[in-house]
Length: 318
Image (cartoon, rainbow, N blue to C red; front, top):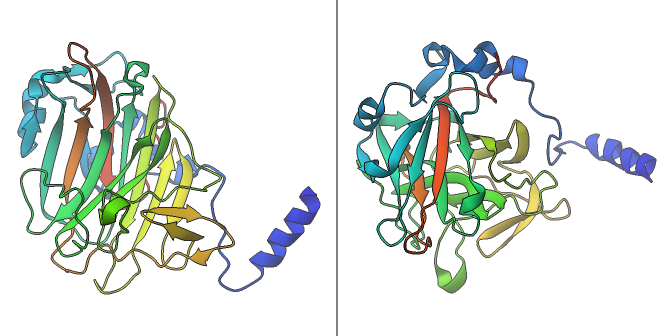
């Protein structure tokens, strides 16, 4: 049976336009940015790097870099429980009945208008099981740009005003995308609350509670803005989870969810925006937990964030 399947695969590969649905092998660390900088030391000086957040210069300096900060009192720094030697992690906590977590939001001016990669480490503690709403790093854009988050949850058809891209526990422990974009699909009652794309992927992964996870996204904006040539690629711990672009992969839409299926129709590609002034101009490090019971507290940790023009990859251990 395995031999027959391989023969079928080779026959398909001979047809023009066939694209394998997923790359099952981890990306070669030697070809990554992180591969040149053990423990990420010095990666911020690489000419292909746009921005780094190492949380290693004190809380006052960290907070000063962000244009909107929520619940700084619930934030602390950790040098013990970190993803690599010399790393520093930020810990965000909430207090049930008092607050819903916190965030760090930064506006980039003028923003990014082509292809970018963003990589970060995140740790979801087992104590948060059952209490996760939106807890991840979001990257996107507003037009006009703002100094604070304005998610417009539930609104559709904002291709001239908003892009929001994240990979998070949409239904913990299942990881998936959560996307707002120009041609996003509506869900229940015609509302737009984010599109998930990983469904049906043989490479889908769950989060491991209490373990550091490396997340990386590649976003290629559509140019020109009327074209459906935008792309999204997701890695988890260096393993490709999915890649969506003009004509790949095959699948189908069911309300606001894309289901990957080799027997389906080719994905149309992302028309992320219909306004050339809308680009990727914000970073939102978010801990939003509105379900913690009164008197209880939960937390999340982030570390080693990098934004660059090429693949970054997991930290190379020193």
